[in-house]
Image (cartoon, rainbow, N blue to C red; front, top):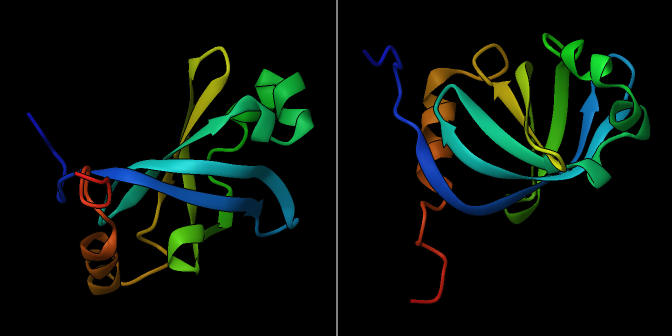
Length: 127
C-alpha cells in the first residue's frame, strides 16, 4: 500500500551545492545530485568525497543528522532551498542517500510548483 500523498518524480541530474546545517553553518556536503523528488521532499545522492571529512571518518555522525535543518543551493535553478533531513542511507561503499523533507519550510503550492519546474527523466537529455 502506497501512503505517499504526492508521487515521486524521477529526474534528469539536478545538482546541489553546499548542503549546510542552518544552526552551525557547517557544510555537510559540498555537492550532490537530486535523484528523485516529490512535493514533500528530495532524495539527494552524495559521493563520499563530497561529504564533510568528519562524516566520512565517523558513520555514527551520519545517523545523528536526522532532524537537522539544512539549506542547499540547486545549481541549475540558481535557487537556495531549505528542509529537514529525515533519513540517511549508505547505498554503496562510496555513495550516501540523504532524504530531505520540505514540508515545514515551504507552503504546499510552492513545493508543487517546484516539482513542475524540475526536469523529469529524459526531459533535458539530448534525444
